[in-house]
Length: 334
Image (cartoon, rainbow, N blue to C red; front, side, top):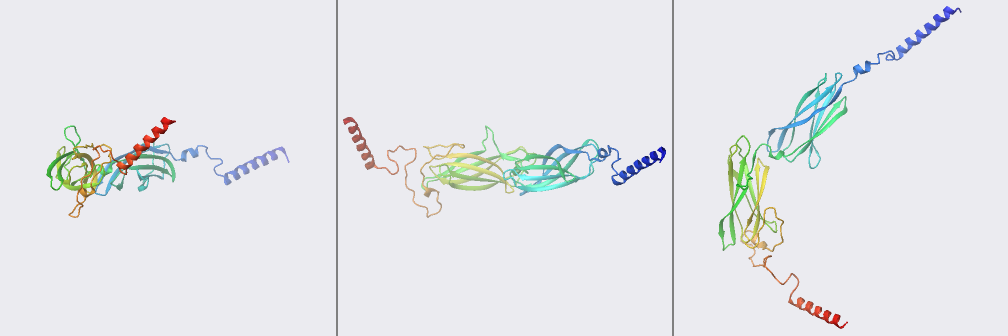
């Protein structure tokens, strides 16, 4: 075989090998930048969700989530965002929703607005997760609280001049050992609209035992924007004791705000609203309603000085004195 024929045969073999490689692996001779051209772009959470309250009713609240999703690079398909609401105290999943996005293009951020509905109570942790082709590419957590107050801007008045609760004596029945207290709850509307359907519940608890001595509820009339109004209740309790006065305002059955004051009916003992309870003797019969209540008997008050203690009488005290004297004589002789 001549030299020229050997060169032609070698060139033909190289060509055949190249053609075979193209047939077996079409990407062997492809442009190395082709993957870069077809690779999806970057996706992330550009802005955490801003949460706005929407429609509310007695049981649920609607939250609108305003999020911005960032994108950069090549066009990106199959992007979705999942929102989950977890109870802030228990950590239990309350609700979730997923939004599919259209193809993202360019270097920019796009707005994403959606709504979720949660029970109108407590607080929640809102988790935002971004998926691309089913894979998590970014996540974020935002917390929201105070949902029980949505729908009304009425609160107990708190100022140096006007207390939230004003307690006064309305009447005294010395024969029955009963005192009627008048409790005026001051409410202020800090919103821009008038409010109605407000209920104020007042509970009186005997300070030392925490027994509920009386409770009642009343409705508050319409309160205009920026206005303050009183909701007054009267409650009758046994005389001679001190009481914590707890009040709560509800709207559509949802707790909106609470306040506490005191009623000092015991002239020898006084309490404050934030004071720790002390052990003081009291008659349970004073707090039992109806004609079958046991007859009230006098008992020593905790503030009176007494030389006796439960379980110790004068005989025990005399024995203790004799024992001390014998011990002193023994030590002197030794």
